[in-house]
Image 1 (cartoon, each protein chain N blue to C red):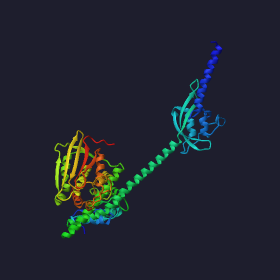
Image 2 (cartoon, rainbow over the protein chains, first blue to last red):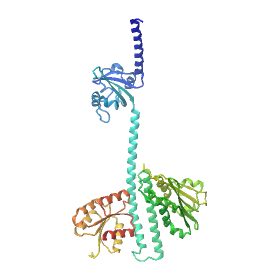
Image 3 (tube, rainbow over the protein chains, first blue to last red):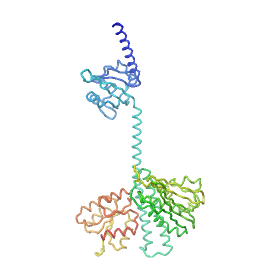
Image 4 (spheres, chains in turn red, cyan):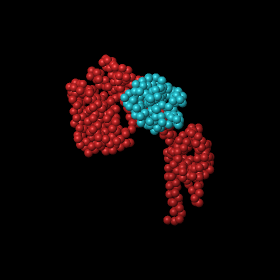
Length: 389
Length: 126
């Protein structure tokens, strides 16, 4: 091969390779441009021309400021200063998102990767900028942020409303509960039997209303993710055995037998004692409520595997029909039959109990073979320390 | 008229029925009771009498129960006066706030009358 043909061939190769790169850059679906240290455009690819709306002769040699970069963006950020800073500290702008401007003045957002090009002496000669349109992404981000702020503000308003409502309901209840209890205590003199009975109804109803208010507040707290557990180690066995005292009086009145089958070896648990007590109380009063006179109500508890205790409250009561099974843990739902109408509760006890158990990473469910066949409510409690999220 | 052998309790509460309930209970249990329905009235009363204990509601028509608490605490003459919050703001956050600023006790409304009297007697004798 002679020298001439060598150069011709190598020239051809060079041309071919250059054409390849030119095509790559020209037809890439990204904005590709170069600018000198003054911020004047020296290269502007086809995609950039289409995107920004400038022909090469309209942009080459012109500053990016006031053509594709507005001096300040919509939020007031000084983009002229940013371009000046980019020429000094190009390393800070390797990945940079900023607002840009189309020919008609419309603002867009572009994610840029900026690469400094140095001369032989290592000084900055030009900056190669490759950009992708992220306007839609930014708009979506903004919308999400607005929605988030609206949700947070609604949540704050709800909390404030609940705190106020609680205050407004408790104030009259203070008089209802306090004065009826005072009457029963004989502070205003002795009452006859009928008066005692009526004052007792007022007091009971007042207390019922109070527990309803507390349940509503608890439930909304759980739903807002603001319910915190106060963990301590306590003897679950003892808590369960003592829990019968809540319903003893009622059981005697209705001739319901209370049966305790709590495992003696039950280890202490780490949980929120007050909430577990409330769960057990809700289960027991639920069982009592739906068990006719002469029936049975019982508690069972045992370790079911290495890390879990299972508690069951069972009854020989009216049971749950298949069609009603979904309502048991639904808020404000009560199974509609003559029996439940006679023994109206808050409709919040079981849903709230389930949420309390779930806060402990436990499960709550029930089994009933149908109407008249009794119900078994279960919950599990992990023995290991409960992981707080 | 005030009986000097009895312990005196100032109740500051703008709710008429809460005031009535608490004062009747305290009187039935042998206490002298002073009544104020706002912060200003309470401060005026405290100029000429020093009770053993003050029962404060947190929501008052003029100043908050916290402000009134601070004013009482700043007065050296009232250094030994116990202060209990009795309020319908029963949420745990409020209870924690009340306890952290230094109230001697917190009782949520609706009160349990036996518990209420027991706590007052405890604080007055203690």
